[in-house]
Each structure stands twice: as structure tokens, then as C-alpha cells.
Image (cartoon, rainbow, N blue to C red; front, top):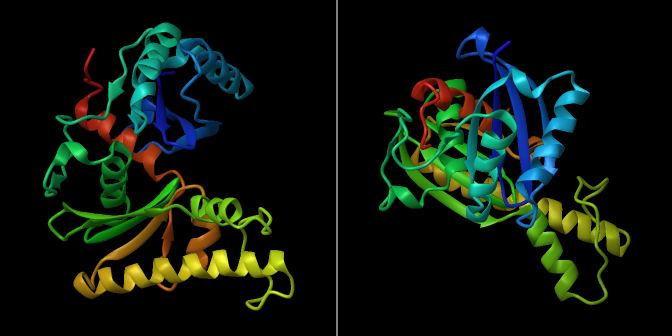
Amino acid sequence: MSLLLAVDVGNTNVVLGIFDLTKGPDTPLVCSWRLATSRERTIDEYGLSTLALMRHHGIEASQIKHVAISCVVPPLHPVLMGLAKTYFGVDAFYVEPGVKTGVKVLIDNPAELGADRLVNAVAGIEMFGAPLIVVDFGTATTFDVINAKKEYLGGLICPGLKISADALFERASRLPRVEIAEPERLVGRNTVQAMQSGIFYGYVGMVDGILDRLLSECPEAKVAATGGLSRVIAPSTRHIKHIALDLTLDGLRTLWFRNQGAGRK
């Protein structure tokens, strides 16, 4: 069996996914795991965690023939490249300027574009077509806009839902930390309920307000969501019709096939 290990490194989580390359470019995700992102972890710590998760699903290191990485945490670049070489004996395919994507990037400085946003755009076009708006609910919430010509136009970056909730807790001394979830009622009857309602519906309102403006400029666009909190927020919005939790991993698979696994050694 020839397997691809896809690694999506975000500011909060490292998401690992396995694809069976023998089934071709459209092979579905076999399994996935989520680790906390830590800039202090060593190659060995990430390596041993990855091997343990794989073995729990009956996957051996010898079955991993290729590794594809998207990373928005620069200090972890050499760590993850070292993981691929040390534990799987391969030179990882790393998403960086110059890789073949099939998407023309029209922002002022394409090198500024986060790898995860580019990968999401590639996967979103493959999955939903264009024009398209991708909303990624991660550490930051990003809105990425692709036109009908499959050109990446740019987007918006907002504080993530958890960042917003944490800021309220940290800056208001009498307010507790609350779970991020859809409240039972709009009008809270105690402090916790009032905070949950304000955080949740305030964020839904922000997302819908931004999408109102984007769709007025690109009315034919489909809207898709990804990211860990997409399942919490997206169902309560007016415009998000598609949720693809594994969008970034699927994009890494697509880019690996487009580049034939060729990457910087």
C-alpha cells in the first residue's frame, strides 16, 4: 500500500490525514487526527505522536511513501520537514511559492498568502467549482474569494471566534470563560447565557454581514466553510451552504498529485 501523509499546520492545531495513493487523485481521506500546535515540540515528539496515532489505526511507517505539508507557523517548517525525513525516509512536498496550483493569485504580493488559504482555494474549486467564497473558522477566520475564472482575488482576515471569546474573558474581570456553543435562547437569563448568546450571535452576524457585502460583488458565488468551528457557526448563517471539514487536507492531496510529489529537498 502506498500512502500519503498530509500535514496541515495551523496556529492552534496540527491536522494529520492519510490518503491511499493507489486509488488515484480523487481518493477520499482514510483517517485523520488533530494535535495541539506547539512551537517547542521536537522532531521526535511530533514523530512519536504521529506513529502512535497511525498504529492505533493499523498503519505502519513503511506504508507512508510521501508527505505533503502546509504550514503557517514558520518555526515548525524545519521540524516537520525533519519529521518526514527522519521517520518516513522521504523529502516532503511543501506548499510554498512556486508550486503548481492551477490557481492564478491576483493579490499584490502572492508570497504573502498563507499556505492554508491557497490550499483551501485549490480544494474548494475542485469540490464546489467557481466562483467561490471559502470561510475558514480557525485561529483567525478568513474569507477567500475566487472568481469565475478560478483566479484568487484576495479576502478578509478577522479575529477567530475563540480569540474573541478569550479577549472578553481576559479583559472583563467579572466575566467567566464560557463554552462556545449555540445558546438555548437569544436573551440570556444569567451571565453565562448572556455571554454565550452575545459571542455566538455576534459572530454569526459578523459572518453574515461580511458575506452580504461579498455576495453583492460576486452574486453567483457558492459559499463553503471549513475549520474546526465551522460546524458550530455555519449552520446558523444565511449564506453558508456547504461545510467541508477536511478541505485543507483534500487540497494537499490535490496539490501533491498536480506536482507529482516534487518539492524542495
